[in-house]
Each structure stands twice: as C-alpha cells, then as structure tokens.
Image (cartoon, one colour):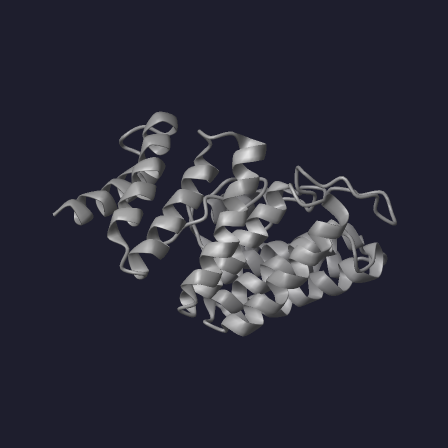
Length: 264
C-alpha cells in the first residue's frame, strides 16, 4: 500500500492515497491574495460533534451531523457562503471516507461552485477543491478523471504559490500515485521524485513526509521488479520513521513489514 501521510490539512489523519482538505479552507502555505478576505467557518457545537465523530472513524454519524448543520445554514434568510462552503466540503469528506463516492462528489461540486463564485478560478482554495474531487475519482478507480482534477489543482498551486510549496509536492505525489495505479511506473516515478525534491528542500531530510516519498518510490521499484532499489528506499523511509515516530507507530511497522518481506 502506497501512502500519503496528509489526509486533512487541519487535523492530520492516518496515511492515505491522496490529500483531502477539511477543517477550514486555508492551507498553511497559501500566500496568494484572494478577491475577498478569507474567513474561517464558525464552529457550532453540531459541527464540533461532527468533526469529533469523523476523527473517531464514525463516518455515518459525521454525515448525519454535517447534513443537519448544512440544512440549518441553508434555511437561514441570509446563509453565510463561508459556512456553506465549509459544510459542503466536510460533508463531502465524510461521505468519501464512508465510501459513498457519488454523494461525496455531489457535495464537493457544490463547494467548488461556491468557491468559484466567491473567490474566482485561480484561488488556492479552488485548487484544494479540485484536489478533493480528484481524490474521489481516484477512489472510484476513474484514474483519467482523477488526473484531470489533480492537474487543475497543480496548475493553480504553481501559479499562485510557486513551485516549491508543500501543496505542490502533494499534487505531484497524488498524480504520481495515479500513474502507478495505471501501471505507468516511469511516469509515476517522475512525479513522486518531484514531490521528494520539494519535501527535502522545504521540510528537511528527516521529515515523515520525506519518508512517505521514499516509501512510495520503494513501492514503484518493487512494481518494476527492481528489488535492490526498493529495499534501498524502504531502508531510508524506515530510518526516518523509526527516529521520528518510534518503532511501534503503524507507519513504522508498515515499512518494516515491507523490508522484512524483501529480506525473506
């Protein structure tokens, strides 16, 4: 299993294939000037309960609670677009994690429509929305559609944030993972190496995200039947995870298991 250690910007979640954005809309590396001043959603008790349910893996409860919060906001005489955007995004995220991909796309598309209207087509939040939609198509096995949205996300991030931002690395990583699922291993390596270059520059050689890149590269070499190279990169990943997360962390154990399997 190839992993990406960032699933949510505001609340880091277990390793997964692609970056999904939740818990507010502004990622740490966004510096482009939006058309309107960015405003974070106001957390109601119901939203806090929904977020807690989601973090605990109770996705059905999160969907129920976010649905109720969205209905309440929509019923107001003058609903806040910030609240509507956030709730549609969070509901899409919960539905995606619950495996209800078509419903997740419905709410992510509603969020995207709000952001395009309020912030314009080149805002970094729009890039995050495209990324989320791409991730759902990725989960559905619709890889060409996933690539389409990941590339849209990447184009905005490159334009607005520059080439060395962590969000750009995430886009490269996600695109690379899709190419790997299509069996296009050389293309996948190209993109995941780009992600690694950015992560090394911005985060340093001992960051878990760098271990993530090494892990993904190791899997690609395994798929290419180059087992010595796979072992080399898994050793690099394991050394970082052992140092930063300890021997009992699930990510460390995952990589150790791959190394042990190769050593048999």
